[in-house]
Length: 300
Image 1 (cartoon, rainbow, N blue to C red):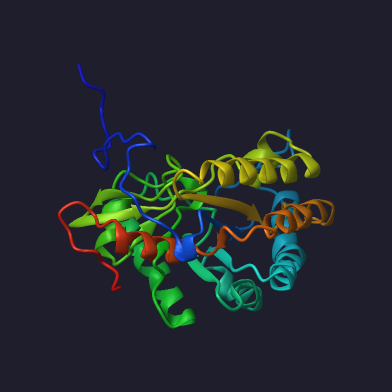
Image 2: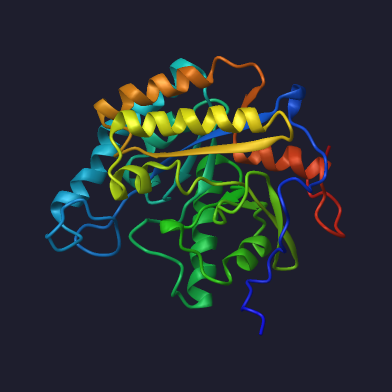
């Protein structure tokens, strides 16, 4: 008896894909995602960093708020100094809470990706009408603040519902970061057509690595470098995408930022690497590999 399927894409081995390339003959596309989040005080969801205490609580709220007051600014300065465009995974409540930080992190060449209103709530479990309203509210807020609608979505808590992709496609989104199943973009069935799934890091991500698995600052930096070096070597055979995700309240801590800076400086040594954003990756891929039975949704 077949297992239940999501029905959005079929199996595809990494060595059996259509040929494509990145700009300038580069082999590895790298994007640095920074999660900028705001949480309700005393209610809702969130990751606890105080075992034994009921959650949410003052300690955990303040720990996250450090990222908005201090850590995020340090990361913005670092990216500016190194010339790296940032992918800002944004809770739109930050437009009211810390708008100047959002502007600083996006900087020139950066991108804002919709990341819900707040990580205090998850879409999974919402009624369809509630989730549609959430997506519309988030999209409208980003369009109003940035002058254009977001192209990509990452669900709060990485916890979309079974209908999220359909709602996103119908709302005009072009890609999602919710499916960490590949090292290349993948077309997935959604709504009345397709979305692109852009590779997203489940492991080279400071929340699981540091907050859940308790890696030290040097260990996380070493993980990021080892992943980069191995993927750069593998990318000589076929172009790949390396996403690296950090949170302002984790890597924004001074002792972690110091080691993370060293990791980024290592990655910047190579001229066959494309530091970019998911929307650029999606557009470049879609022009070369159209979705099944559909015309490419991006102009050449």
